[in-house]
Length: 427
Image (cartoon, rainbow, N blue to C red):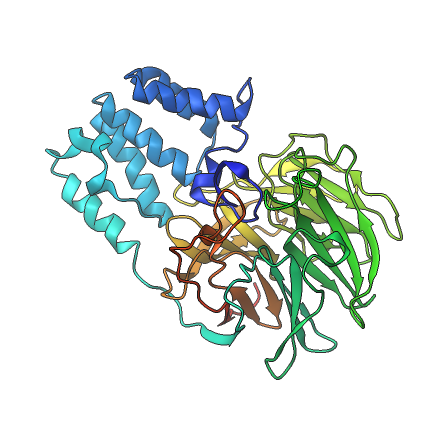
């Protein structure tokens, strides 16, 4: 996603500033802005309390925790500031503490140099993935990646070019759809239903579109064989209040789609013709990545706060409990791998994490950082499982698009790179 326009896909730090605040009793963006304004006017108590409210009872969202640590430091509560910063160190995240004036009160603390070193340690490169392939179209700005196991083809979405690219077994790229074909806007999350030979694509028209189309979102169903459109699905009142971001496909062909702006999940039943809200609006806080459990009994959804499990049969919702020192916030792509979840977190640092779950799948027991801070990274977003391997977009380059939906002239674009990571044995 890209700043306050919120029209691209992928949770970035600057996007997180505009998402719905958990437990806030007013417009979430206004609540966030009022909280930040309290800091600017010197009302540090209100600043601290607003951040606490946004974090909620079990808040582990790194960006807000970092701001809360700064609020404590501004109030002179150096002990609370250190404790909160240590939580972030344990999460494996990193922030520019030494350059942040909010933490001036900590400079005299004996623990301050150690905190600086610990944050620096979290910026170490982790992982041994290799480059699977690159696509010689640097202005694609890809967000979604899908794989067809029947043909061995990969599919790459394009936010800027409004199309889908197919990469064949030889590594050659071909247009699966042409630019803006069938009214496509920026293409986002995608999934292949190989059994039914379909490709499903989420799309959103950004500010570069005609005024009447801006903010329109849709889910597209294509035939894999020839790229022909089968059907296009839209939510009711489709202007700016919705954003179809990512999707998951059930065993009977049912489709679950995250609607980031409406804070819900839509469901398309087997052979259905109408997308229907599965959850009440604003149940979730900017939902993004989505995946079914291995037994297909739960749908896991990543949102601003963390990961939520939804019972397929009953619709019951339960946030995955997460131990102290771990964070499931800031997840973009989310994938089920045995009794674990593979997640791409594109904040500080950018990384790929495996969350090991409890036997009943409702608790995160521990995490393993599989990749982090790779030199190829320019906002990794989503990927796809390929046997015991995880293939993912290393460099979406989302920041190359400006607030008008145009490419920034100052940005040097690189060819999209897909990394290939061998995973541990399935838990």
